[in-house]
Amino acid sequence: QVQLVESGGGLVQAGGSLRLSCAASGDTFSINTMGWYRRTPGKRRELVAALGSVGRPNYADSVKGRFTISWDNAKNTAYLQMNSLNPGDTAVYYCAGDRLIATRPNDYWGQGTSVTVSS
Image (cartoon, rainbow, N blue to C red; front, side, top):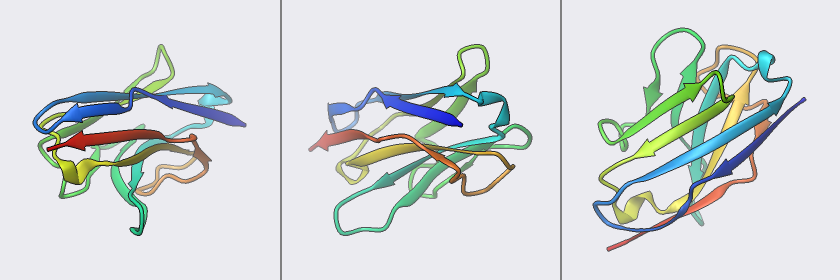
């Protein structure tokens, strides 16, 4: 099994930056894709970014050029660097892992971390 724990959420002004972290523990060798999703009240969960062990990361159109996903193998931690934040980015962000190379990772989930962007 794999456990994922997010951190780094908070309140930030529009135009600011945040970096979310997702620490993985357990059978981390089984992870081949990490991703970040977000959910706002009344909306569907949206895939923000995903990164497989091979290939390039993919991003939602709404965050391209502003968000960067990365993975630190030594720390077993995924990151989501979020720049130029706007109120539309306000959501609960969840990291997810998958045993496969997947465009939408969904085998393992974190508990979520809240991001609020004020105007």
